Length: 220
Image (cartoon, rainbow, N blue to C red):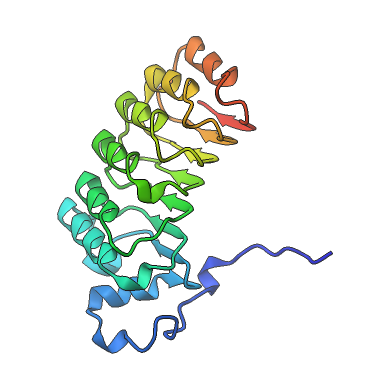
C-alpha cells in the first residue's frame, strides 16, 4: 500500500511559471498574491503585514485586498482559499462573491476578518461557495443572527467541517444550528467560546435529529 504523506503547503511555492510569464506586468500587491498561490490550487494569505508594513489591518485594506483578489485572473484554478486577519469585513465579502475569476473552492477559511452577521449573510447566499466542504469562520463577531443565516443557507449544504470558535452565537444560535437541514452533512462542529450556556442548547446539539452525521462536537 502506498504511504500517504501529509501535504506541506509551505513547500508548494509558486514556481513563477504556473500562469505564464506575467510577473513583470504585476503591481507590487499582485505579486504578493501571486507568490501566495501554492501548487496552483491554494491561496493562503494569513495576515496583512506584507501589504501594510504596519499594525493591524483596517476595513479599507480589507476591501482593497478583496478587490485585488477578486480581479486577479491567476486565482481561477484555486480550490482552497485561506484569507485571515485581513479585516475583509462585509464589504470585502461581497466583493469576493462578485468575482469573475474566483472558482468554486472546497476549503474556505475566513477567520479573524470582522465579517460579523452581515458578512456571514453574504457568503451564506453566494452560489460560488456551494462546493465548500470545510468552512472556518472563527473570531468574526458572529451572533445568533449569523448562525441562523448559516443554518438556513442554501449553498453550504455540502459542508462537513464547520469551525465557529470564539464567536458569540449563544444558546439561540446553537439551537438554530442544531435544527438545521442545510448543515445535515456536518461531521465536525466546533462551537467553543460561543457563550453557549444552557443545558437545553448543549443537549440539542448533542442529540440533534438533523446533524446525524456528526462525529466531533466541541462546545465550551
